[in-house]
Image (cartoon, rainbow, N blue to C red; front, side, top):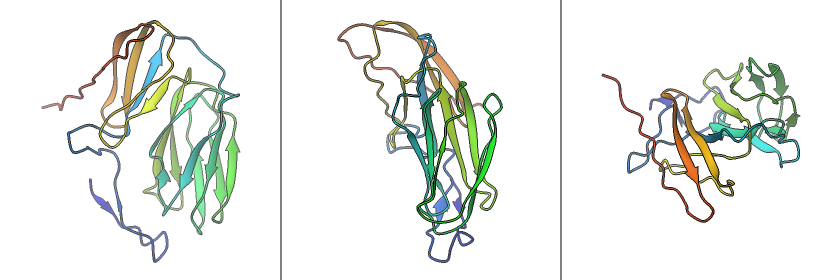
Length: 191
C-alpha cells in the first residue's frame, strides 16, 4: 500500500502506510471482521468498552468490532486537534472534536448492526471502521489473517467475513461442544 505523508500531523510524526490491504507473510489478510450471524441480537451494554485511539494521526485499530449497545471509547494519544466523524446510517451520525493527548469520549449510541466509517476532518487520510455486530461473537484478523472466536454455543450458524475493499463472504458452520473448527475464507481477485 502507498505511503501517506504525515507531516501535517506534527513535525516528528512517522510516515504511515495505507491500511486497506495488508497481507501477512503467508498471504493472510489483516483487518477482516469475522462474525457469527443467526444467533440473534444481544445487548452489549454490559460488555467492557471497545477502544478506538488516535496515534500519530492514525486510528488504531483500523477495524474494530463492537456488539450492538456496547460503549465505544474514543481516545486521542496525539497532542494535536482531531475531528472525529462517525458516519453511521442506521446509527446516529456523530461529529466531535478532540483537542489534546489524553482526550476521551464515550459513544453509547451504536445500537444497530452496521459498518460505521470513522474519519477525521482535520487529517483526511485518517480512516477506520467500527463494525457493529448483533452479538459479541466476532474477531478481527491479525497480521497473518488469523482469527479465533471463543465460547460460541453449539449450533448451526452463518460465519461472515467483511473487508472494506473486498466486501462480504459467508459460509455455514456447525459448532459442537468440544471441537474447534478450522475455517478459511478466500477472497478471489477479479479479472
